Length: 447
Image (cartoon, rainbow, N blue to C red; front, side, top):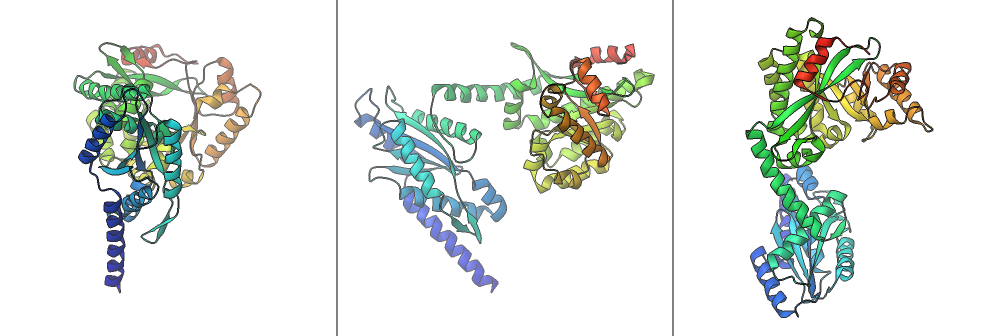
């Protein structure tokens, strides 16, 4: 019985693969040659035709859930449906990596190309049965219009691909028309990724530390370690200027090891240097990519062992979105991290998924309330009620609460009155280089 089922599955996959072969007869080289020929036929300086570049949004999800054979089947079905939307002189090609290119021979401007893309989206959206599961496909689509000086086929496909990447960033099923700024962004992103790798080798990254203060005693109980890039030309860069590129390029995983090791080493050094800092902790952020990396638990173990730091003095911060995006794998990883004895914090609570169910499933110790709620304290609106609700929820689950973005004495008075355990923000101090944080500890400052 099992064998018969396997034969049916394989025949289905082969049928869909055959549909793909019939619908997309051109490979990338042949497609580029056809585009070059088409460019030579059109009158110079006019909008002659359009190219779409698209990728099925559900491709990775199908591959992960059902396996690579079914993701190939999805591509086959998509190619067949696209072919049914095209005219006699249009062409479809598979570019690899789950991407397709489409020549729209008669689409002489953005409006016509977008209308054709909408038709393709509609055809893709019909339900498709894959491996016993009903799949509704969408595509991220980019449009590039030939004309106005377009002379290079490869550049035309490149521009459509850049627009497709813009669509993918906006969410499933989106369509974008190429603009020159997209290409400049892609070039800058590529250059930045290369520079980031060299920065890691040259040890241009450094940590700054922002104090976390006990609201009851006014003393520093921890520092959050925040990554900075000492760029040789642009000076000190904050994470917003490079973190997305670091995560996309994979640099954040090796950089994360460096951050863990240095943060643990510095914290242990403070504890040995200052009698009052013997139990001070350090908070380190883990990105979604780090959380999914198979070596993250070993990286934390190595950092603790290398510094001789007690595990409970290391707090690991993960955003709600990183937890939810990592799925079931996050459950196992966080439980393994918790087994080491480290503390786990949810960062930016209230602005992500805010699915309360995960608070029961994951061994969370601390909720950090997003600064946007703290900023609204004392003003008209529900920010105060939200903060009070989060504090009550956290305390009811045995968790501590740290509001971020405490910038004024009034903010501090509000979060104290709401019985927040700790607080963090510029009212106490901005993030400081290690030597200035050391001086702050030595001063014994209390708020």
